[in-house]
Image (cartoon, rainbow over all chains, first blue to last red; front, side, top):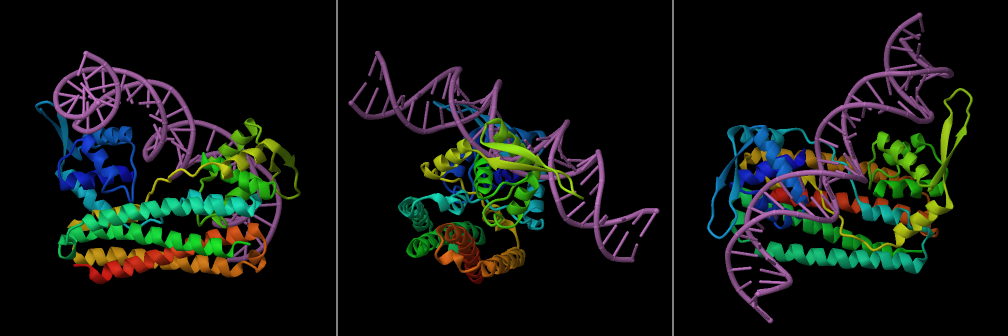
Length: 175
Length: 175
DNA sequence: CTGGCATGGTTGACTAATCGACTAGGCGAT
DNA sequence: ATCGCCTAGTCGATTAGTCAACCATGCCAG
């Protein structure tokens, strides 16, 4: 599964708890992946079972203990293997395009409404991504790791922009 | 589930067998959704259980019988309800961006290789989509249903083009 | 002093999706 | 004659993902 790899990737940057991981999935990683917290904890347990990560309990004052997970050597090898493996075709899944595809029975006004709603959503997401991008320092110009992370965000932005342009053009010519 | 809706949408265009549906998913619908055949058959059975579709067996010469599924009135209402329902945020899932995000440990040449491979894939997909688009008649200018179906393909095309531009820009500035 | 929020984690039930094998007849090509 | 492909559909096993509840503690605001 891909989630196991993403978690390994994050653990490779720093040891983390499931809670930390969830926060990453909800922020820095959320423009290309989403993960449910139950699934994160279960995948983490599986990584430990498979020897790709280890846990140690770190007590804290005033807070619950942290179950800190660290990537192992085997885990690093797994990660490398994934990064170097051949690209499979990733299955497309665009629920919104699906709606549009089947919207032929709707009134013209309803279709316009649908497209407008989507546009508002996309615009909001664009603003969010652009704000995140602005927060990125200038390390991303020299350091390859930072550059690639920033690049994925840029990919998300271009992606959303393309969608907005498509929405506008689709509205304009709608018969 | 979304698949049930997509199947209803297709059945709304014409009565079909699971086999027919699978072919649609592998051709006209493949730019926004993919479905496994086992899942199609199971979902079809579920639609019948729920009264959203009916089956009748149509014998054929030289070929196995067709289990032809037709949408019911209740099915049409379901479909309409879906089309009119509020847009949820659809969870992003971009395995390729995920790889790039974690590719910081790779050599520069390896990263370039990864991006080039993806570019070749995207280019191939673009050619495929453009060929499909060229096959669409001119009905799509006047008829709303045809227009919207063509629009989703156009969306796919813009999407892939944006990805190619992103890949080029990412390669160009890679430190 | 109470309620909400953050930390940190677990469980059960369920739905969705994938993979591979299996059945079975007909067709055309080698 | 046999091999592979097309039509058409079914089944079992497994993985992935979602939803909602539940546990416990501590902090701060009202």
